[in-house]
Structures are given as C-alpha cells and as structure tokens.
Length: 152
Image 1: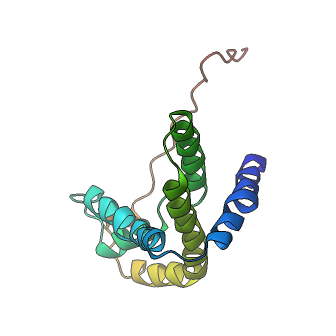
Image 2 (image 1 turned 45 degrees about the vertical axis):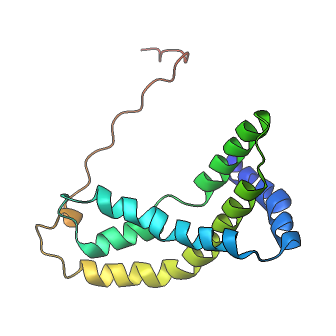
C-alpha cells in the first residue's frame, strides 16, 4: 500500500500542478477522453470475442479495466526512457496526466452506480452464463529469481 501512495503523491505533487498551470488544451483532453473510452474499451471487447460473455460484462470490464496506478507507473517509465534518449516529453506528460485525472474523476463518480447497474443485470443472467461460474483457483506463488528457497 505504501508504494501505491507514493506513486499517487508523486503524481499529485509534480504532474497535477503542471496541468493546472498549462490550462485546458483540446488535443490532450480529446486524447484523454478517447483513451478512457475507445482506446481501452474496444480492445477489451475484442478480447472477449468467443468467450460467451454478455455485452454488459464487456462494457463493465472495458470501463473499469486497468487504470489509475498502472497509468501513472507507465507514464513515469516512459518519461524516464524518452528523456534519456533526448525525445521531447511534454505532449506525453500532458496527455497522460489528463487521462489519469479524468479517469480518477469519471471512474470514481461512476463506480457505485455502475456496480449497482451491473449487479441488477447479473441477477438476470442464465445460470450457465460464464460470468456466474466460480473463478478458478489462483496459481501458487512462484519463487522470485534469486530468492532463497523455503526451508522444510
């Protein structure tokens, strides 16, 4: 939990003030909206083709799929790598930052209503729906490279 908090603190301390100083620019905002909808939701829908999952599930997972913390980490990694190569990063930082800010707002506001909507829909799914099958057991954790073996 501590490392997640640190990532959000870095984002809030360094990137959010920059966005506020720059003001609203339509291109990064347009990209952010597209990123939160089409760019994320279309691949999820395609990934579910042939899965038997209902459209409600595809929509819900597409909207609430990976977001937030992963975006901050990917932004920081990309920023570092591009700067090391001398590539300008202003557009990347602005577009990704708006995407993160809008994601936090939109997903935070929609979480409760969307979860209630999906729960209502899921109660009507046929008993044999893939969504209603028990999840498979998680695989046993693997030993990290270089980690000592557990003593028996």
